[in-house]
Image 1 (cartoon, protein in one colour):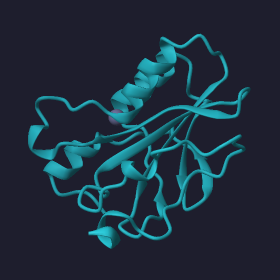
Image 2: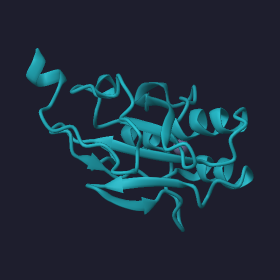
Image 3: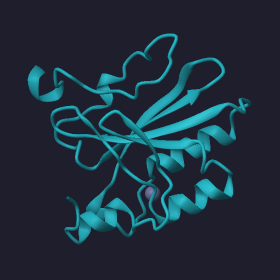
Length: 150
Ligand SMILES: [Zn+2]
């Protein structure tokens, strides 16, 4: 299923990179892209993506809290020696366009606790925006459970 699993124009954050990280297209899944949040951890000084991944909000398992992309990313940053890390999070549309995703209430607390609120960004199309917003919503899993996704 090459066309379903791999849209022709998969957008990625437009940042200064020495080289695009390998295996990034396989973060994409046609069937889960609406609920999957992808992340890159970017080292500003070395101009490289040092870690990437994706996290799928699990609607039916709302009570067993699913691990959010931000949580995974913060965990990575805390154990890294680099002080030059930025976190990029986004979702993909089924056509591979980047859609912004903002930190939920609990991730916002975590991000602020470790002082990453100015270093975490999301992308709306290719426009870079801050991922920590004034009034964070409940988690995506919560919205899926109650049918509040767009
Ligand atoms: Zn969250």
